[in-house]
Length: 414
Ligand SMILES: Cc1ncc(COP(=O)(O)O)c(C=O)c1O
Image (cartoon, rainbow, N blue to C red; front, side, top):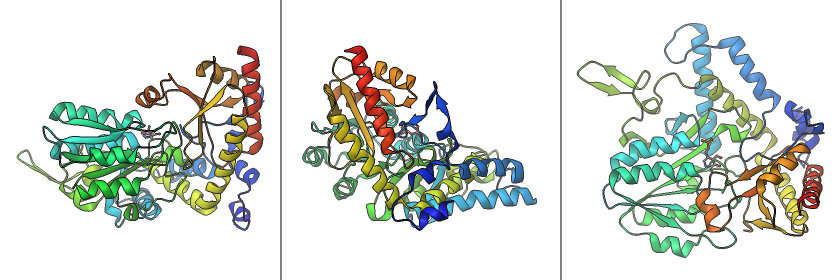
């Protein structure tokens, strides 16, 4: 089915939709309109099939067995590493560490590189728009080490104030950790400028790619990120499969994250030596099935083509922005011109949660609340927003359904 899509110039959204079985279900007697893709995306049939194939065909623990099933599972697991390496253009497969997701990737670096390198009086720069998972691990580290967090402020459009960032840079700054794309606003941050400036003062940069990897082309070498993380479940893949990329020289100097099987060279009661990269950071039985199937998800995206997906999502964003702006009392939060397909908004006199519940009654799934970015909500002086986020399978008709739904909500509550 994907072949027929390949020969077309534009993405055939209706053919794509047929590959996502969940999209044909109903919610409360209405067709499902799934607009919560920034939280997690739906899964195509190939991804679901690949999971079933693994468990019904070659389920085995990896790396340790010499039997056929173990060899097949190991080969498939390691094939994902090669696919991820290409997908984000890492320079070697040893720089790809499998984790449960972005959150675990950040915690891994905070607990290893961070504990080894952050000292009393040091500073870590994050931004006002970070997801809690790119705030709390660094706060915990700073508490332990008597270091300080510094925060890049934003303007009314939700864009980073880069001059303020440059002012924050000084020799005490050892790490800058920022998101590539905001989950709450959709704003794309100028990560290359952020990285260049940080490197000039010798700081290491972590880029949280949880929201960017599904929408943008990622080239970690061109970007020159020291660390980069993403979650497979936001990329049409299964939950529990994530990636940490790190430059080899940094990963090699870091102590292990967790101790256990697989991450060792030799163990005796006197001393343990650790495995080489990437296994030093992959203790215990990993999430084999989901990591194997992450490759299927990436292949699926690659086959359709990120540019085509981006063009389609951009058209949805443009149309939705124009239509939502016509709704009286509705204000979009985050108006940068550099955005991916996320629209956050508030409506006068209506609580976001009420909007979410009433839209759900019409089968429309949106996210409401602080989107794990409470400090960002404080910057805008709001408790939360309603967020619609689009994926490759969303249609203009679904945008219309959202707009009609919002008119009904306003009529009912205002
Ligand atoms: C920007 C950003 N960072 C980090 C995360 C955490 O990702 P996960 O829950 O998959 O670990 C998310 C999830 O929504 C996110 O949007």
